Length: 477
Image (cartoon, rainbow, N blue to C red; front, side, top):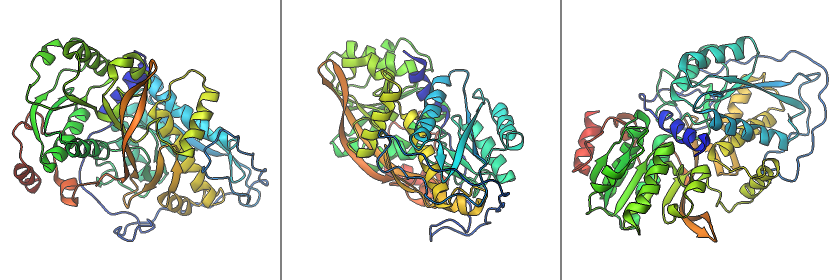
């Protein structure tokens, strides 16, 4: 298996850990329901030479991508806009980081690398997946390289550290990597007017497949997830929604990360179950599905691949027919039938022939698309920090993964997709089963649940869990 498949699931597992309750949002946020808070500080641009013309968008670009503004930047402002992308360019997440950065640059190339008459210069920094390194790199990008906006970020602990830093120095951060911590955008330690997230969070991706499973008449589920903090948050999110709907968890299995032989676990699967949901990163998911296909022969349980990482990208290519019938879910699928996705795929395959599309490429692409749209709204004047942030808050775009906008906490609202793996000739393909539109962090959950539910802390407590007991857990905080 390629490192890219393993890295994607590792990042999602590490990138999803909860932290705290909500705090105020700035008064400049567009939502009428947002509580008041401090407005971001504006900094005026220094005069420079007149802007150049705008490059024409190639035919492979997304059809509804924001066109660069015809108006020029502030009089004489020819200086480029510098964007700092913080990614784990070395180590186990390197392939994921490359996908994310390549997607970001692919969108910029579709608009000629120029928005509103100003060249966009991308500066990358390697955080090596380490918190202290990530914080140091953020400081270097802002204080030495003079970037005007930060982006990327995969590992949650790096995300926390950088979010706290940008809150202090008042530099915009666009989370366009896999930092999906459940409460990043509401915990007072990290929440600020300067952070927006465009990717995903735990409940946003775990709740829809639980809802879908129950709607299909499935009632008894086995949870299998590696014993990692982020993965436990995923299993808790899925299980709580499934139990709330009326389902039950009949078995819970948490193998150590890096398990190669799943035979002992397969032998003990509860025979009363009708659903098997897996949260298995990297080679673990590959090994499990490969061995399950051989062990079980024809599948008798419906399998749901949490976060869809084993039913997309390089892992799916390796499983091939052994993945047939498995259901996956994510905020992107190659099977999305939208012009924006068709244009994105055309551009991607023209630039990277033979390369497998991953969700990380799309997340980076959308990050750059949203940045360009916000810059267009302010005619390239990123130095008008207040105006630029307001433009980000009001994001409402059609992208390769569908419509994207932000909630009152500046967290992403987007579609969630469920697909089944079918075989087309000798190749596995995505057959879309259902699209859940406009899914947010709070989709299907009350504000009290969001604030008080102990995500990631209910390991080995799900068998026999009832809705009444869940209500008690939330009430107790």
